Image 1 (cartoon, rainbow, N blue to C red):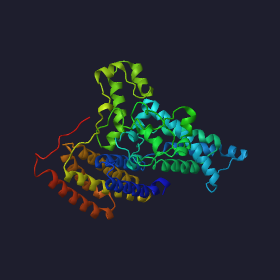
Image 2: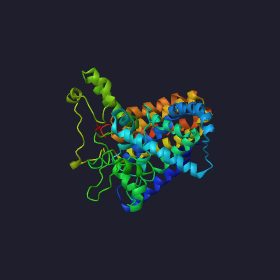
Image 3: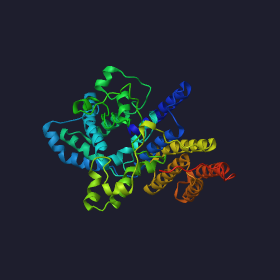
Image 4: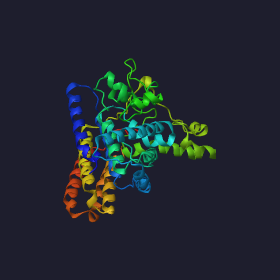
Length: 414
């Protein structure tokens, strides 16, 4: 089990503690729909990783093995048992992460992969778990330079896990500025700046562990008392569907490429500055930016029963994902892919329920029927729990949404 997977229960415990404090103190940091949307994106990221090939290791391992005789002749020898080697590895990894993160914000196609992490209009510990699913993996190229210092794959993986785990705690609004820390480390204060869409804060503070890189390369911005952070992205997502979240900017670029008449634009818009759109495509399909002077968070209202249903489903999906992450090595690829697909469908439909999407009435029943239909290809030990789950969920859903067909919410669309 990797470090990140092992850390997930501790992440969830920290989220629960912050949530309890939020309710007790009345901070107003958490909304059910946004929190589930962020956690759903995190689950999607982890489970899709079970059925995808990791391009970084696919390239890094053979390249390292090819260069290994050179490392040996130069006396380069890393060890995870040496704490100083690990510190150096994290520093080197974080330097590469800074440049990856910066490019993610500055170039269209990289932003499309990274935007998921910024779509939440709240800022709490669930935001840390809102991760991209890397549908078009591009970040691997930024870590290949670590071959120049002979970093072994296992050290790279460990340093990357430490770097990511560190970033969890900085996603909170209730940790104050600590002046000396602001000069050296990424902190909740300077990372709040990174997640804000205020003009003064946009595209600042890219470091993962160290804020030193931002100070060195001119991208640092202090959090200002007179400029409260407004979280989210300029082109709001307006859905809690985690798959739609991953496709948001890709979809917009694709539509621009289809609508523009210029072949040069069709080919180059992907690699232009983030937010660039061909003039003819923008004229044909204008997309308004959010009004920060009158900012309203996306918050469709649904019945209390539907909120409880969505929460219960999310808890079940979270448990299923943890079980799947722990037992993936014991399953065939076909069974693993089927289980991942069922979880993805669950996350998508649950997000649409929270959106107030009227069609989720039928989609949820179809999802449960499809899950039941997959039983013959699943391990026999899962049949009884899945049948019980489908019957209980189907009954609860029917009681909640079908007796009074007029009791629906108005669907909210992009």
